[in-house]
Every structure is written in C-alpha cells, then in structure tokens.
Length: 259
Ligand code: 13P
Image 1: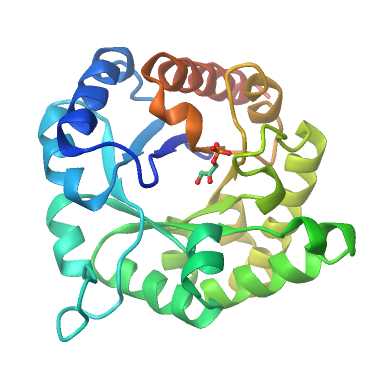
Image 2: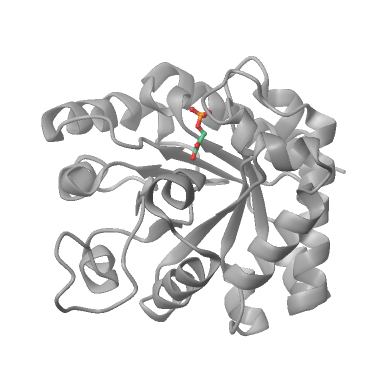
C-alpha cells in the first residue's frame, strides 16, 4: 500500500517572517496526520525558519530546487549538501524551472541522482504543455521526461522517489485535470516506470497530481486509484485550504485501504 502524500509548493512567495507565520498557522491542523506524508516547500531563505516552526511534528520540509554539485563556483546556486542540512525532500524539474530557467531532462536527472545520493527524497515533476496535449503528444512527453529523470537509478532508489504529474495547462489556471485525466495519465507514467525500473518499483512509487488543486476538486481526484497524493501551489499558501486538503488526503488514504 502506497502512503499518500500532500505537498505544498510555496513557489516564490513569502518573506521569512511571513513563511514562519504561515507554517505556524498550519501546524496545529497538520499535527495529527501521521498516516500520510505532509510536506511543505517554502523558498530557500525560509527553510530554516519553517523547519524550526514545525519541529516536533510529522510535517516534513522540502526545497523547491537545488544544484547537483556539492560545492564550487556556481554563483547563486544552492547545493545538495546545503539542502540536506535543512530538509528531507526537494522538488526537481518543476515545469516553471524547465520553462523559465532552461532546465533540461539531463539537468533534471543530475539533480535527481544528487538528491538521492544525499539522502533527500526528490519530488520529480513531469507534465505536458497545452500545445503538446492538443497535439496528442502527452504520452511521448511524459515517457521522455520520466525515463530521463530516473535514468541510472537502481530499482530501489527509484521506488523511494516521488513523481508529480503536473500538466502545465493546469498549473495556476484554475483548470484542474478531470479525475479521469489525472488517473489515466498517472497510470501512463506508472507504465513507463514499470518498463524502465520494473513492476515492483512501479507498484511502490508514489505518483502525485498537481495543477489547480483546491478543496472543491480534490476529493474526486485523490479518490482515483493511480493518484497517490497532490502537489499544491496556490492553495498551499492558504492555511485553512492546505489543512483541508491534507484531511481530504488522509480520508482518501483510509478509504483506499479498504479497496
Ligand atoms: P497551482 O496549484 O497553483 O496550480 O500550482 C501547481 C504547482 O505548480 C505545484 O507545484
């Protein structure tokens, strides 16, 4: 049985005091959710403050990106060793990094490999653009992104990663994928992982959905058998909404145990 996940990607929002305040606002509501993994991913500069704010809870803290080299002349970058000191998870290859900052599948792979080498759980993002979707290229794009992201990992290492299917057309648009779309496409990603890493890995790896998740649409999406959790943007900046999404995820996890 796959342990469900709810992860908040705060993107480039919140100063340090604002981030600590938001984490503190969520803390009580997220406290008693051991059955699922709850992860919050603030900006780098707020990682230490947020980590301290959620101490002695089961809330995990993740970064939103990192470089793959351990140290060196890479002005402005943050290394896996620095991230490792502050958190347990790291989002890799978000579509905003791919589109705004030129991250390639090869760079994504270097980062995934580095994350695992440093004991971090990568949350690896894949997803097609609107144009690719309309052109019928979704399967081809996801196949390429997932295959290259996980290249070189052992079956066991890949099983411990988390994959997030985030269709670019659903991110920040208010137009979430339908439950059937989220399920079918997550299933496609799982098939690619099965081919590349073997069936036990595909059966164990968590595949999240992301894109315009809110408490109104989430129960129907998380009820899908191929969806093991969510990566939330905008709604993760609203404490009550994120706590609601976490509770909905816990309820879906409990329901899935009986299926
Ligand atoms: P929204 O939930 O704001 O659409 O963002 C999704 C996302 O990009 C999470 O990584």
